[in-house]
Length: 196
Length: 122
Image 1 (tube, one colour):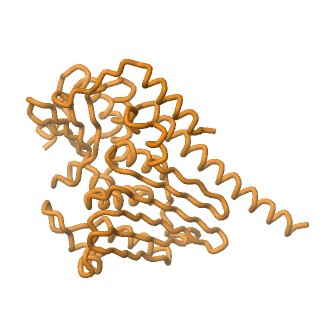
Image 2 (cartoon, one colour):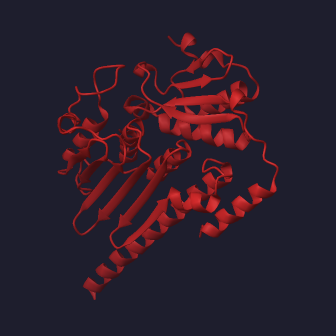
Image 3 (cartoon, chains in turn red, brown):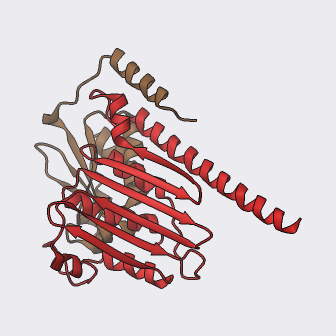
């Protein structure tokens, strides 16, 4: 994959196939620790301990169209390439959590890419499910929870209607910009303090 | 800054309008293959282009959604159009530009873009 955000989309599709009603996508960047943690958690069908152990095996899949399943193995490989790793926790009937850790300064780090586009498409193309997107950069964070949007919009306006899609897109762009600026301001203050 | 207040305004505006309810009997479904193969081949920008063009054209009876791997990974990104009473049309090796044309020619004007179909590309 060219962008980690595409892996997020792929992993979230597994949650959708598992019949999840709520999917939580969490990005946590910590510049001091040089780490990026991406978590996709769902309340879908879940897996047995045996299936969980095999999920990162490319030759294990539950689908019928072909005998390989590359989504989780690819994501795992990309995390391990940077010196990070991937872990899956799952319980039958409760849900599954996929957590991948990356070391962003590593030469083999794949860029995150357009994560907002992934989130927007997941929301607008899955009207029957809820999503929570949480992104944190050091001390700054924001959350988008479709349950909150639905509470305001009621039944008559869909999340996929053009005006709402536009609002979500704008919100994601503005909030991402805000936490990026606030985080980089701190780095700037930190370095200028060292010089003085 | 985007606020929930703006969402309330969107809701109130929608309430005040006479909404043309989509008739589920004649709803057209646009399915984009979004399994690992499709995503790796560039399905996300295609899906994005379809959603935006359908919104721009105000096509009320069209639902754009995703589907899994249908087993023809070498033809990804794949877009299927399913309309009631019509044969399913499968478009292959899609790009955002081709997607815009499919919305305009196929969904708006009812003309299948034969050159992008699996029949013309296999």
